[in-house]
Length: 514
Image 1 (cartoon, one colour):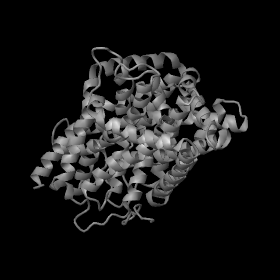
Image 2 (cartoon, helix red, strand yellow):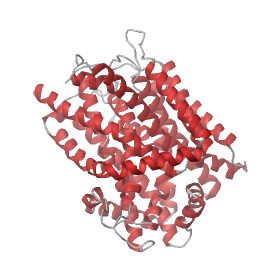
Image 3 (cartoon, helix red, strand yellow):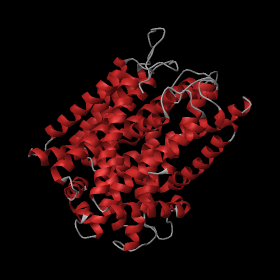
Image 4 (tube, one colour):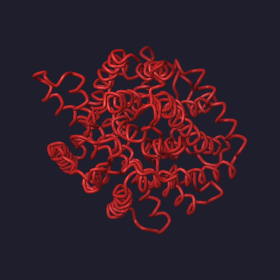
């Protein structure tokens, strides 16, 4: 169903805050130059700062997802859950299915696709809870932890900003999608420090979105380049990486120019249907019964150990599992929360808060369970049956080689499997970048109506800026540890700002009689 969300009824000229474009662009340029000139030093500084930060605030990050889940369920099943965004007679322009697949495609990024193949192997070789490495117990828990890291708790974090954004935008009718402006409204615009705080928070919001994209791009681009070198015999080089980035940039720029209904929606649908075909081939062309059994078993283990996983900081034995992985994924999600919140607002017209909350949490999580369950369980079966040493290749040669090896064991074979997986990555990256350009363009507009979209020109400006990030990461050869460190640092300001906004939103709802 095609919907027209990109209307501008009055054909009015949109007013942008140029400082919210110029300052982030300068910061990206400065950081890019520093990383290019001092790649090892910059990575070392970033890692040291991140490690210190995580050691001091890990307890807060770990405890927040289950708390947010309880708050979200309370809001959804209270009378507030019946509030319809846009008014009692508003009708949602897109189906719930389309709603979920756009959020899934734009909000997860290439990181979810890459980790779906190999994340379990990290936990198999260095398991939590003091388990023996490479044991059957570690293998069993590995997929469960994979689903935990990408499941309900992480999807719940979107609600920290989505609930305040939707309430402020639709119920209080403040036509702005700037995080700082919303905070200013909640604080009181007459306060002396309000204007300065608004500017700072708006910049934090934009930087957080830019930073969160670095991980999904840093994981996806190298694999696509490696795929081309394998299939066509190209030597791996910076030129191949640049060519891949430019191709993706053209794709998501074209989609962005078309708008939500003709661009992002269509691209998301293609993305999901391609993913279903790919996963169906993996499922029915591999150890089908083992994959299905392991998926069901992993979901059960995850639910059984949910509380323990949520608070597993391991202070006595000091294994560092949560610090290396769980906190990383929570921070990764925080970065995407900033971007996804705007997409949720623009798509949620005509939906109740209950539909918005349950669709985002359980709909998106269900998609992730399928992605992680099929890809991860298939690779695990290869490991346990001795067909391919995924964990060994991952440790010695890296993520890209491990994924290529896994795909070579499928019925598709190396060439077809590698190409099919690369296409899925391209589609995920393009939809994520398209959603990010919508978010960033919306975040720089002074006012934006319910059925209005940012101008195509401004979205294209952000598309160009977004393309600079993967070019820099590719040039400096940023590894997973560097990406993890960057993500760990961008999450905390979004969480703190979101907590304030959520508390204020509850007060507003009480004042409004909900």
